[in-house]
Image (cartoon, rainbow, N blue to C red; front, side):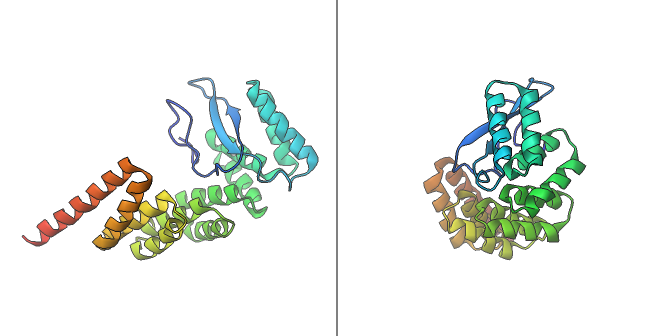
Length: 237
């Protein structure tokens, strides 16, 4: 299981760190079990910033992927990244992650993050969180959020909830995402409100989740009610 990937077997891996607001393309990498794994990637964000020759190699990557030419896709991707295409560099990082080359992964993520690539900032922040380098991870998540990444603020909220054990600050951060209508932000506010035993707020945000995602919302509201009931029962005995 890679840092960025979701469930590898039985379908496409989820790629939550990538935006879905522009065109989706695919990068194919070798998978010892199934022969290939498909990465989803937004490749349009940096097209205007990258040198034309880098864009050309990146477009060649896409064509190679569509033709299932994995070796050519990898070759074109690496050329595009070396020529300054930041999204290509980010996908190169995903390749290193898949093949468990963490040294190359961190080195290339840093290049992308220093170049202002949002996905590289979030990816590096996630890697550093796993390595308990929390101060630098927090800085990266905040920078990514300032550039428009709602996912980054959710990761920062998770960092405060889990690593710092600070549900109050975590809830404040989740509210930033929730204010944008983000489902994970709404869930985060509800969950941290439960930890703070602020039941009215937890139920309020749980109902907002239910509007977006009925199944998830109902389960969340049930968890809130059960947790409240259990705590009342414990304290009454």
